[in-house]
Length: 205
Image (tube, rainbow, N blue to C red; front, side, top):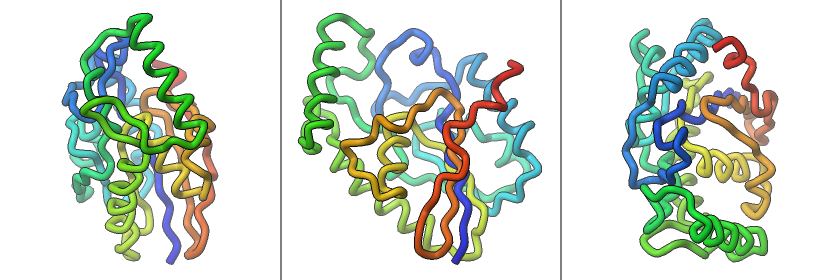
């Protein structure tokens, strides 16, 4: 079974712009810039013959690829594609205190403590478990040869580790911005990133 996955992060929201922490618990809308990014991505990739669209349960992902859905491409929401939950820090502006908290937990993750999480939030291992369930659904349809997936920043980094057999401790080796593209091919055995952190479609907005 061959499959090509176009994996994008959602477009910009006001909380992104303001540096406020989102996460799984914040169901925010795209802002004007995010809608421009969504249209730019659509214009660049509308000729790709997508068989299916998969999105998270958070509306910013559907808003980011709504133009493709409007073409009649079937879509499905998977909770496994939701952003990592940042718990008590969600909805909070960045401060020196919580910046310190984030640096500390990310050091823990890099050092291999992938069960570390904020109060009320999720660990990388917990996100991995639900992402594996989502991937099981996505990869169980051989007839869907070309798939568009819209998800979230930290979750994107984690799923790319899963696909490329990198340890989750290396999640930060996958840079991203709003509505950037990672294109991944599957040849029946292995996944390969063939387009890495592509933002070419965003250059003229």
